[in-house]
Image (cartoon, rainbow, N blue to C red; front, side):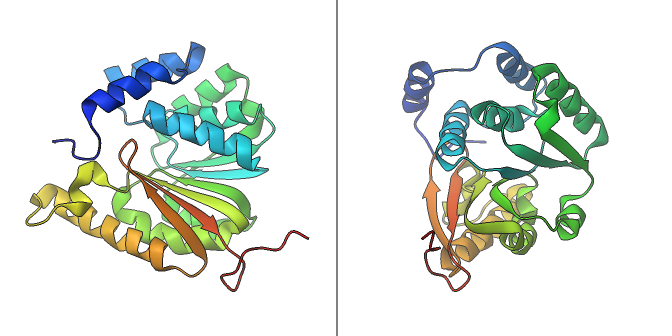
Length: 225
């Protein structure tokens, strides 16, 4: 599919300039590339790392574990001081991720919740300081109410892949196999940007990232005094 969010020369420059991962994370990048497993882009990983360092979340919820790459990015950024719950529907992939967590030394702070995210989200009750949404794009609208319920005031919601190769902004007909996802993501972005409980920025890095800040219960800035 044609890429219509970023410029290839800018991507190459950014990826050459930013500090890249080494060790296990580099091995996971190579494995994902070889086996066509989607993981976050290097520039998205860099932003995620910085946000964790700035926000210092005590608890993070990730929706969509895959092989554990982004969870390990967040665990490393917090130096293992943040508890991370991560949801994965594929049992085999979840097992791989758990192996990587143990291998990394961050297994003590990452818990894999196996099953359908829609069902698991409804069962969670403890609030989170940060939520990273990186699962089935067509289900983002269903995830949002539960994510808002679970996100603390002053918390951050990160939604990956929201521009979907630029198809959410394409005028005219979108190919049938991509049309439903593009429509659903448009609905999701409208819900984010119009929700009175959120301040949202849409950032054209990776496959598009929405960064939302959870305001107070009445849509005001939380008071920390």
